[in-house]
Length: 137
View 1: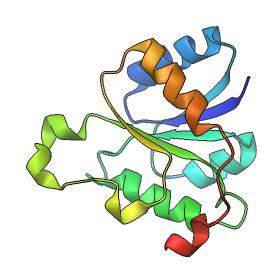
View 2: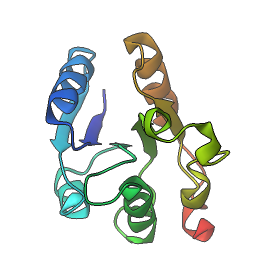
View 3: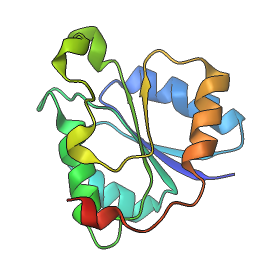
């Protein structure tokens, strides 16, 4: 189906998610830190980036990574889906939309997510999108 890259500091969660997605036919790579994410993405050439929002080194590191991807000439058109439990730590009063500073992304999915819903949303995110992403930053 598609090559996916999961970037999440929770190794157990990433391994479980990767296993579920692989059983659905995807080829999945994982990465656990903000450091080296762009290099990992360039090396494995994913068709979709599944990105956590919070990292130990930066509470909103996912936004930083999304912005970095959008500024990278090799990766700027890579679809991004946030998969995060940010609202568990920051109630919805944190922001009306935690992705507002890193548009455009394809989707924001709250953890936990049911496998059928995740697969549908991954499939939707893999659909072609207009190439206007770099203008958003």
